[in-house]
Amino acid sequence: MYPSPETTNLITIAQARSVSRRRFLWDVARTTAATSIFGLRSFGQNSRISLPARRLVVVTFGGGARDEETFAVEGQRYIPRMLGELIPQATFFTQVVNRGILGHYVANASLTTGCYESFDNFIPTPPSNPTLFEYYRRDRAARADDVWVIAPSNGFDRIGASTHPAYGSQLGATMVLPKQLLGGLANRKAGAFDHLLTDSYEDNSKVSVSSQHALTLTALADRLKLPVSDFLAYAATVTSPDELSLYIARHLMSHLAPSLIWITLHDIDVAHAGAYSLYTDAITRTDRICAELWKTIETNPEYAGKTDMFVLPDFGRDSDFEPGGNGFQHHRTGDALSRTTWMLALGPGIRQNVSVDRRLDSIDLVPTLAAKLGCNAAFAQGKIITEVLA
Ligand SMILES: [Zn+2]
Image 1 (cartoon, rainbow, N blue to C red):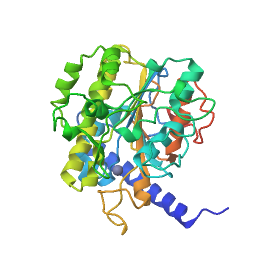
Image 2 (image 1 turned 45 degrees about the horizontal axis):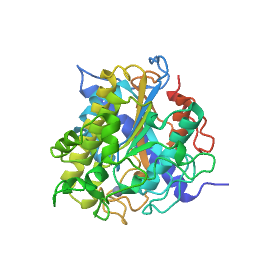
Image 3 (image 1 turned 90 degrees about the vertical axis):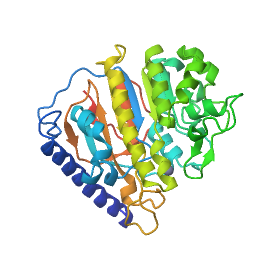
């Protein structure tokens, strides 16, 4: 069977994007000479590797940014921490293609199952294929407190478990939806926290007040030994929901130290509002949050030296040249550039300072993480990314 013209086009453009990302990174290495400089090597060239990780943190760089605002010369100023701190310690994959539906919930669900899920993005339904969380909990007899998902809004509240008959919610992750914790406050003053409560940047809807599938504020406070008053006082100081996610993740790591944490960042999707500066501010914030998560890992004895972190976007955004789109604002055309992203992986079981240019599929993540965690992703459709295995 011959590939369709659309598939051929996607492959061609994805390969070209991989080459340009690699070139951008080489240029950064060459022009930033003295300090944290990385001379990105091809995979396999004399790179360091040590013992495999025992803990895992996965971060989605969401809702997706273009190379023009990240790796390209004009975009590098928005991601200084990834370029200066994370990539020099990482294996960087220049070509990760998402062939599924480009809606955030369904795309993130697909990332957790290793299958391209096909449900309606705007209906809160669980994925039908088992998630990584269920594989891990069943095969490793892990408690719910050992597997956590921190996600941006209502649309994601079913991401922690599937409806698969051999798995299901009894084996799912513990879910935290930071916006919903605030939206559900019984005595919230009118207007309080409103700037943090947008559920979807696509239709500007507000977060609803409760979910059967996520922790309540009281339950979270109890589990993390975090006074509700402290959480609310912190929330009053931040401008972004992803900052709240970082705050919760840090408390979680300090107090429960779960083996698997999945954090879905989403601030960048404010791009749907059409304001370029909000979009680039969110990219810089996301860049900082990723670096701070890694710093937290490195300074927490429960995680330091035994944790791998994976960072990848759920997908990209429309190019400036696609007639059906509106550039950075949306991801509605399904064009090749909005499907072609990247991934970085770092930790004790992963080679530092190398790049991999072969094409990966988004759904390759789950079987790879399952191999790292010692569980069997029996229904995942992707292939194991051998470059990150010890
Ligand atoms: Zn979006």
